[in-house]
Length: 144
Image (cartoon, rainbow, N blue to C red; front, side):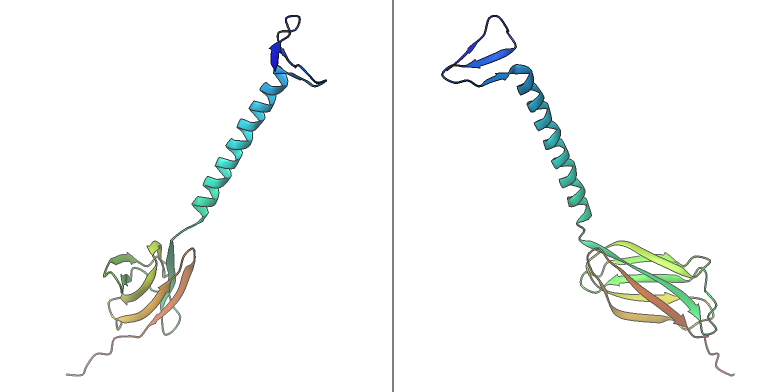
């Protein structure tokens, strides 16, 4: 049985025992509990954000001499859904497809003066980036 001690209103006295608990102490414990719950929620949200169900493809496009090809058109087509993603290479010949749904992709690249190239079964896995270096061959002109 609990009752308030009139001499010290911030104290809660437990009858039948020697233990007393200050209301201030219980308030501090409540605040500590709130802080601990807050930290747990924030940590949980960070962990949930760290779990990803997407991946990416990053690569370079160059020619047979090793020179990077800028502004080449790169396409990634999801083999399961048919969804197509497009980009162009940077001045350093790099391309990136970020935040792709998981699955197999066909990556194709085109550049004027070069033979088109297509690579199938590029597998995008959760939380990882597939590295795909591509080398284009010069377009062979037919003699007239």
